Length: 239
Image (cartoon, one colour):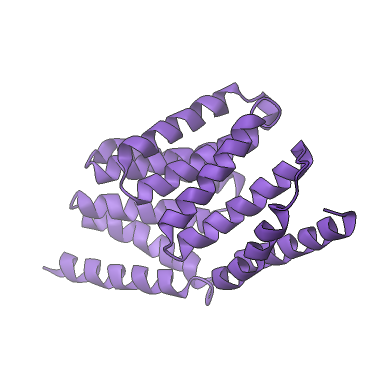
């Protein structure tokens, strides 16, 4: 690939990232797919190229996951893993990210044993990072996925412990109205509902709605779902 082609690819990748930020996954997908086509024609692949290529593959996998193409997302994430594993010693952070992404995907697929394998590996890699490279938000993502596994397995106390820990990290390093905090609060809503602790669930649910309403129309579907949950909890508590 010529430098002009690489510049073209970088421009497309930046445009796709804008689409991802606005949750326009279909548009991002249509931009990313041609990048893969062009990139796969390159024969002499050095670290810089493969690093950029893996990032595009990762974004493409994320788009597929959001559009409920889980099988395609899995294939793409595994491609990323093969690249990141090759350069693990010089870029542990990127290796950690793909391990967490795979752990999250398998958690959603309810493939708990596989998810647990990748997430525990991610935790191990996190521990190996130099202190200056240890981003607590990476750790929050890992333990959030582990919490979801515990939730699915009805290990509620373990799930709450991890969800609380992730929330504390996110509120400290982001802010209390960040969308990732809403995710943690939503997880806490779910686990309290599963435990039959509806007053606690209602408290968390209200906080989620407050955050999501600030981010409309971007998270309109999520807000509607939480409002429906809020109304249901009110009805339950009236009985």
